[in-house]
Length: 327
Image (tube, rainbow, N blue to C red; front, side):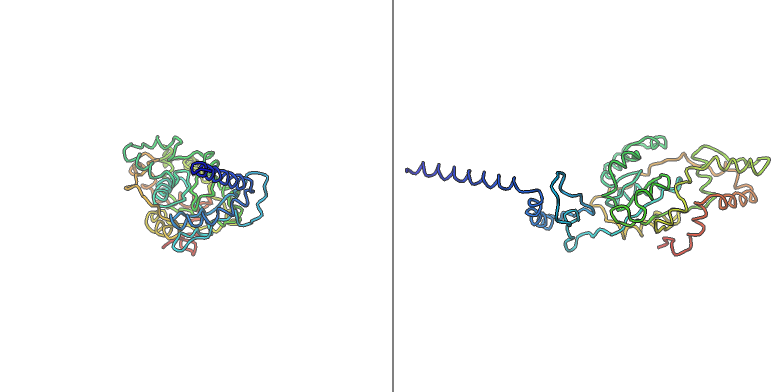
């Protein structure tokens, strides 16, 4: 056999061997492939600082059964890596408590923030767009990346979330996260608390309404109060049976509260700065709010709110207690 024939024979042999190995690997079950690849994936994570997910879906989508019970768990964190906390946080976005800005700022600064008013994964791009585009309050009434449709949030899911901000009826929290029903992970709920009358007037402003300070009866005056309310059913006493619930002062949410959460969330690699506030209200003119001119009416309003609205009752008992996030 001449030299050229021997070279050709060796090349053919190598190709045949390569084909046999490829066929052998393709015939392995998905389970064996996963086990063979796992050391490689661990090495890749170490060499390129790839972070494990907090929750991992099973790699099998066929009828093959996964016998390794750990395959659906995240790989162990490497030294110096971010460690996912064994807890989630839920923000009850009560209307007119600054929740839109809070959701947006958190998403811009930290990873795995999932909210009706913004997600971490595209918050950088959205804030850059906001820098060049004027956002009127009317613009925030339309669904988009700064105001995510509820159905879209359900499609995305919450498996890659450390912090969920939502403005929705209270039963949502129980059905999705109550009593560790979400992958066995507990959730701590956070509720913003604001001065009752000031909060009422912000709701009136949003609804373009005025209190009837000249009403001929208390009943008519209270009716004008009720017309201002915006979805106060986002909190309910039954939530306390399913969650640990903490409160924080509305006035301190961009200082004390952000500092508190910064110790529990993973900072983003890149942050768009400065953050552009997305307005949801027209400017409020306190001089046109008659309630401040009548001290007795102001006192009567405060008592009515505390007596009839659970949200204000919760804040009254929580603020100043061990459940207040004060530092």
